[in-house]
Amino acid sequence: MYIIILVCIFLTCTHITGQTDSNAVSSHFSGKILATNNGISLVPSFSLDKPALLFNLALGKRRLSFDPDIRFSLEGKPWSMLFWFRYKAVQKNKLDLRVGMHPGYNFRTISVVSYEKTKDVIETRRFLAFEIAPNYRISDKIKVGAYYLFSLGFDDSQKYTHFVTLNTSFPNIKVLPGIQVGL
Image 1: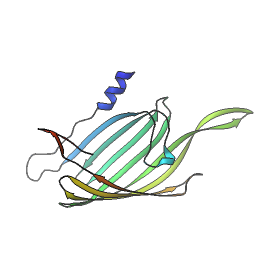
Image 2: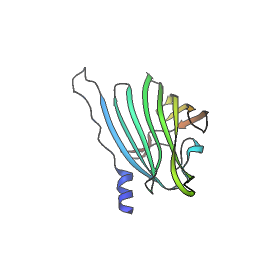
Image 3: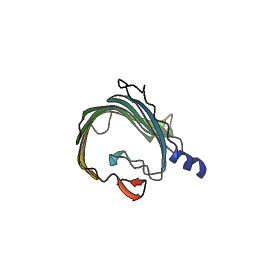
Image 4: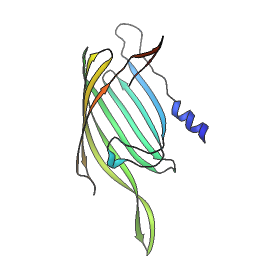
């Protein structure tokens, strides 16, 4: 079991690029399988709070991409499914702006009474979410940005969610000659 989890953690697919001429259109496909011990989610109320597997894919061309994010508990029960459509609206030397939207499905187990017997069933909660993510490169070693997520709930759950984060990253930190890390 541990070997499977380790293989899943380090599994990534290849990057595909279009033709090599100057009019080439760059396409990409990538994927990764991740294991987590606590099922944490970007939005805390959607956290699973137990071990989970995450399947992330990315398929795109030019500025548009489709990025499904599918998550399961290690028991095999679905946790959430997000089907992101993202667009890189601005790609300048120092400024990037990404916008996106997704239909989302969040799953939870609830107990119901049917024919005088209590049983567990999986309930699906549906959402439609929108994101905007500006990032500004101060230097080759410092980036700052923000992330805003708005979600509209359709079922008996949160009707409106506003989620905001501010972030800083430090890419291209040289550890050894030819080896770099980012924070």
